[in-house]
Image (cartoon, rainbow, N blue to C red; front, side, top):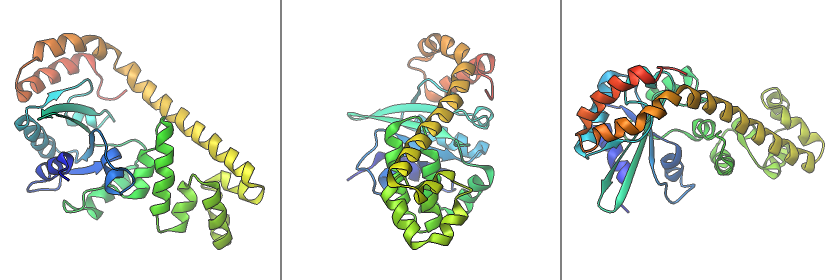
Length: 260
């Protein structure tokens, strides 16, 4: 079956490695979902990479949705850029970051060393970090990703299943002791399955709250930009993407800080 998001990835990476598939489409490619309604990519934080992706999107007649400009100054601050276009009956939604949440600089740098244009998909561990959102369904995905991980230490860190953790502990008792400082809820393995399940639920709620706080800082920083957006959207309606992009950058400099 044709996947427009894979085709876009090939176009983004034509001649150079610029884009890595992340989030929902990565879940699909790890065979944990049948489809995802949009595409998410991590881009190299280089002017050439960003301009190339913008040119590809322009060829498809894309337009901006509310968010930051596809510009390294905002992307470096953790903002994301959102664009879309239509292909037949399909609404193709595209989202871009250069510094995904919860991915430290060292791991991000390794993406570009370990992956390739032939396999441009984030690995299960990185994807599990990215999926620590404030959406309940993402924690189900994290649990399934943990089952794809080959390293028992990684499974101890990311499993969302009390049963799976108890089975791991039975096989890797010494490793369990080593992993407890990194994930304190693992101490509940020595108590009961009920206690472990309660600890997993509490951890999920805590992670969701942490992400809510992170998102709130961006929402607050974007309030003036959100107020200005309807007028900008009207002003750029029907314009080619490159022209709309230049206007967006001009407006965003005034209303949207580079970092929250």
